Image (cartoon, rainbow, N blue to C red):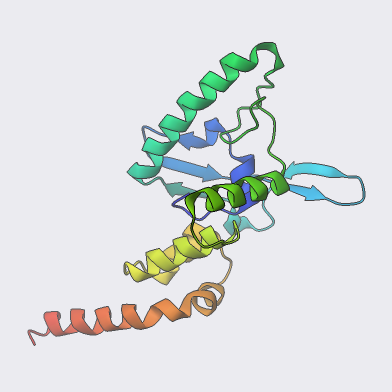
Length: 178
């Protein structure tokens, strides 16, 4: 997704967290697998900064509308076997997707596309890198990613910063009439 959510945030996302008309998405829960027989658990993100509302890019809103239509077809096909948890991303029966299954599906999609393999989490890194390369302020990027410290973002994505620095220097030339 174009907003760089964590896997657990994505798997816990519900339709009532998404405002397609208003163009926003609210992250306030997560899903994770706990070991020792505990299984899948849903809960709040571990930090306050991880709980966030973000503007939804139009391209994402459009993709989510299409996804919702496909999910409605799955619901109809499943009939009484559908478990309505209101999840944006669910199994074909409406239940929570197992995080490892998401990884396997992602790997299958990569193989089918014939592109270099990346981890699912690398989508988050790609989001941050693209935002920084477009000149978005690191402060805004940390808000979108739900990072707790600016240094976390700049340490991870510092390789993009020289381009932003060049843009800043060019902007100063424009401001000073050079």
